[in-house]
Image (cartoon, rainbow, N blue to C red):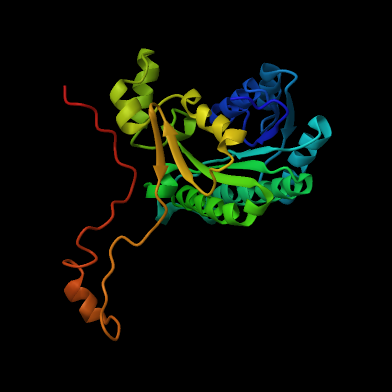
Length: 300
């Protein structure tokens, strides 16, 4: 997959998944703006990628930071073709212990940061008139919910909704918008109770993740996610837009959009008593699951 002549911004790319995305895009030929709040991480990432990269130290969330990122791409490399909104933080607590700041901080970085960066990128891409690729990073928590992650799950669900909306709004300009739902061993996924013990064990032993984990659970390394990012950034993906696409380990998946699962009708409408009487045998007979399932290792 060749990205020669393309210019990308990857937010939150000083380490982890973001760094892997930036490195993969550069390896495919793109010029990359590396972004992080940690100056040392930005400096190290730019040094590792080389002349194909420039760095911006900024916390995403406000308009000024988004404009700074786009300006850096244009001033250093002359244009902007690809945006990957990866920056994020965690402030995990159960609902009754989560503070206003815990909620607001996560929403500001993930949801508002995605909005401000995508808006600035869309303005530039539309001015260029040559299309573009906006790749938003969502999460299984946004698709399923996750214990202790009210703020994070809400933000990631909102990001998937943004992708569907912006795919409509930007289609005329040839700009595709997709949400990627990655699952990889990172410091963030280590905080998810379902995956933390498995990641810790792999790091303790130095052994690769077992086949059942890579295939059945779709959990792998950060490098396992990069192929999808590079593909969506390329001309080969010009007809893919408005999708939520999962990737991790050996698994590639298309997430369904929310849709009516079961429908029933009552002449004149539904009273509370009528709903109570029919629920278990009607539309509620096969309720949806919720929460990220715990890993299920094969029986010994």
